[in-house]
Length: 187
Image 1 (cartoon, rainbow, N blue to C red):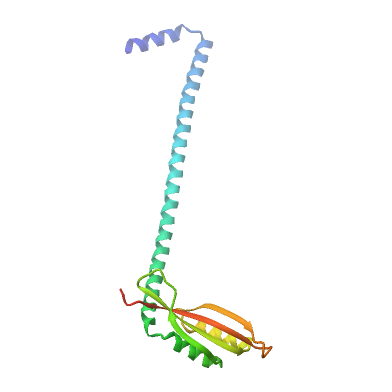
Image 2 (image 1 turned 120 degrees about the horizontal axis):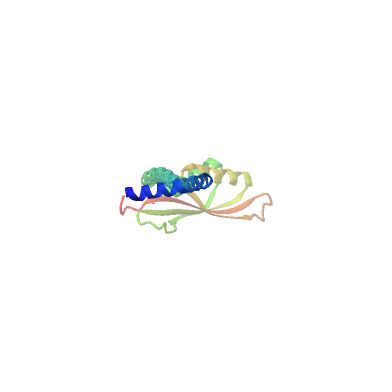
């Protein structure tokens, strides 16, 4: 190895000063190119790693947000489960009759029946179908608002309104109201 270095040095000494400076310039340019390309590829690799890290951090942030949302939904589900269990004593027809009395409305043809399937064996729906005859629009509106506000688990499932032909300023309405209860299977 030492001999090769001495041979290169001797060959360099035989060159003219102009050739020596050109050779040194070429060597500097080659070394500069190697360093430049090396730093370029290193920088590109670092940038790629930083982008991957940022993408992973973004995914972690998204997972954290989803986890928080999931926890909130679990709490909401548990709260609704507790409400459904506590709603077992609600008698839908009695509640609708009380709201009607408070609204100054007289009910006709009130009937309670099982509701629509809920998709869960733990929850059932009970409905009440009532008819209101010869009622003003403002009293019907008040009745429906009171029903909606009476209990979070009470929903108005159907509403059919038609004019009362005997009294032109009055309406006849059929209202279907439902509520959700624990079915008694698993609680």
